Image (cartoon, rainbow, N blue to C red):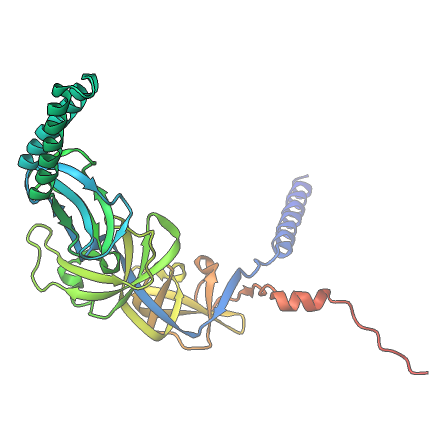
Length: 358
């Protein structure tokens, strides 16, 4: 009986071991990870920073009143273009205004009295003589006390007008602002560490908040050698190259300053790097479906790409997607590149049947 039980137990154990071996042998082998690769080529790379600038007019004039008085004539308005030595306005002095006002009142009074007097009478003749004398005094006053002309000192556009015809003005009061739009510049500033990076003649890309879809350019014309103690920055001036009439003083803009540049470098996307425990940057290249680990050193880096100084060669295929699953020496599956538009067009083009000669 005991022998039968022992034989049964041994049979069950043999059967269990056999099943477990079958299960182990039936397990599928893990698939090679799928990766995407790109061929390394020499390309230019640059690094830039953004600066904030303000449009200013290099040549402008605030027209001040030469004396106290009243605006007798106003010959310009906002947005009018005026040439140098154009008469902008005429100011009547207080003395002239007072004298002319008195003589005008006298003329008006005599004219009214004469209208109410019987023609041919002695009183009418006397009033008529007095009226003629008052008109001569008015004409004399207008010629003797001429108005003070306000002359433009430059050619430009009237951007601001602070007066109206007939308004009272005081000496040195600001009347008008005239701007020469051909003298527009952009003022910005750079920190001490960037002072050597910006040079006279450098061409910078410019974008205005008012025209987000348009791209302008400006050239560096002046670098101030003295630092601004308030901002600890060096002021810089730039001349707009492709300006338009829509750009006016006071507008804000964004400047792109290139700080580092290489015309020929091996560059890779920024997200291909893996950092090991020693702080070294690692990438993977693929050779005959086998992944090989490379330790690299980097240089210039911008928002999208980084220069690789050492560790990679032109023509090698670097893993740009799926590198997190890789180890040195592991076998991989390489994702096939998508066909180009020209290849897709060729595939979809109908085949031309040849004509059979009779």
